Image (cartoon, rainbow, N blue to C red; front, side, top):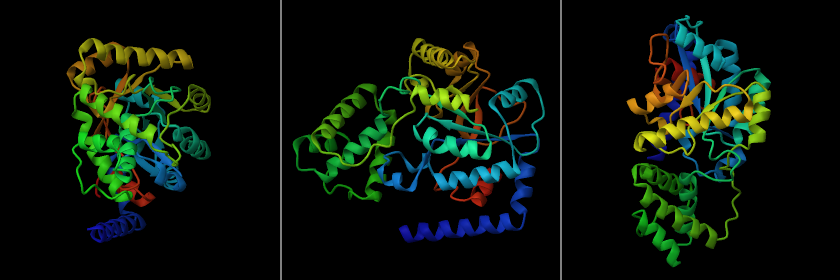
Length: 346
């Protein structure tokens, strides 16, 4: 199965390169983005030596050297918009310049500062980072990374009662996944399915996971951290814009309406207080939204809000349900593959 996926990836990469080298991709992108824009959705930019240490899903990770290549291509072929220009054109009917692009980051990971920010400055490009404010400068971690880390440790040390309890709690029984990269991915996929679990059940699992991590000596460095407010202010001074990703990063369409309003309002208030500038953009955690959450976002004065649904955007689209194109290493490990993804052909 792995060899099949490798062959498939090689075929796709070759096709993208041929389309790129012949100029066909350029024409396809120009046609798709005539009077429209593509909003690129990044999350994490990680150095090669950090890849083995992260417990984030591969679908939100791109290598630093790949991101560098992406930016070189975007600077050469695209009109990269600021969030202010993007929002103004979306709301006021301005035609998008040909091949318009907006670069966004969800979650506010610390590598947005250490890896992405220097590369954006190198290429003279802007971006907007969406912050879940309860995590910024807090030392807290997302529960998905915490649980995946604990499950992998439990698989490797499955003889202890606490490890067995944790594994049973998430439905794992012997034979366990192997404690290698493939096993880590299997565990991460399992953790992703817990997004729909009740908060009470999830909290109990996280409590057990924290106990396992406290019990087992963990020698792998923790790269799954978030920005500090000091880093946010430095990035803002360097031309990076910031928007809200709510406060707690909970799925807003599963919260009571009063909690939704507080999430939307308090996050905007906190970022504006820290940076002294208006926050006009919102990104729905996990992309989950409904009519109620959209009304709450509009009521707080956000100009635009972004989902995780794939596609391009232009004047006439709902400014509170804007589509993006997710970018990660597995789907866009080169400039031609990024172009193909933007063109919608691969």
